[in-house]
Image (cartoon, rainbow, N blue to C red; front, side):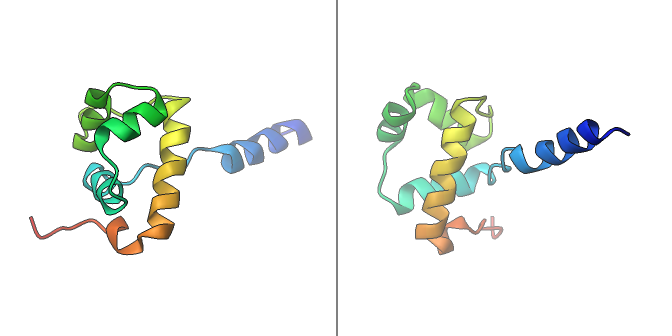
Length: 90
């Protein structure tokens, strides 16, 4: 393997987009901050139905929305760590 191949492999690891939390946690994080689906949709320039689908697990965001959504959820998880835990009692 060449040096450039190794560099590309390392870059792919570092540059990967973090996984999204489970759909229920996405909703919990949004609600913990008092955000509505409409507010989130407006910020991400998507329809509120899109947020509903992301939070229900019907669909997953694609780039560039995924990057922005992951960033938002990470920031909310730092702000509300207890909301970042999936409730498995259901």
